[in-house]
Length: 168
Image 1: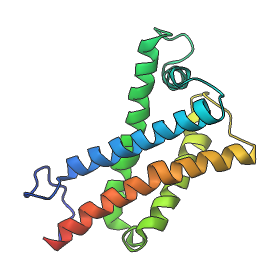
Image 2 (image 1 turned 45 degrees about the vertical axis):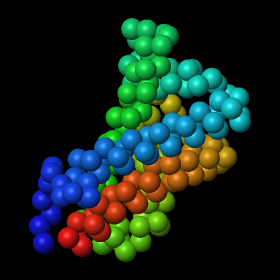
Image 3 (image 1 turned 180 degrees about the vertical axis):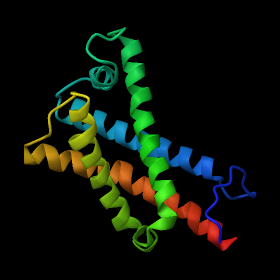
């Protein structure tokens, strides 16, 4: 069995690229929608536009080109770039890690914890965007969001691709 990624697909079966795009798009939408609901609606810490502008500002710096809609749209772009990056990484490691194939749900939830760790312990501090979270409620809230909105959808979509591929 070859682990080659094929860009074309048979009828009824998505290609590798379609799978990655679907996983990244769904995970990105779930995560963004959940962040807006939790932080804008429920907790009322920010508005949806400010949340998106914060993502854009985090990527492009405080002295960015825009502070309005353009910055919010750049935040959407950065957010989905990150979601697609997590989908791509999972897609490529999936065939080589037996646990991912055997435990689709558990591995998805753990991948969400991994995503939280990468973002909060490496990416955000590295780019001086935020300090490492130190309050347990914030840590748990963020990790749970990424477990169910990033890790689980990516795991289920990617594993579905490989299951279908191995059956045909």
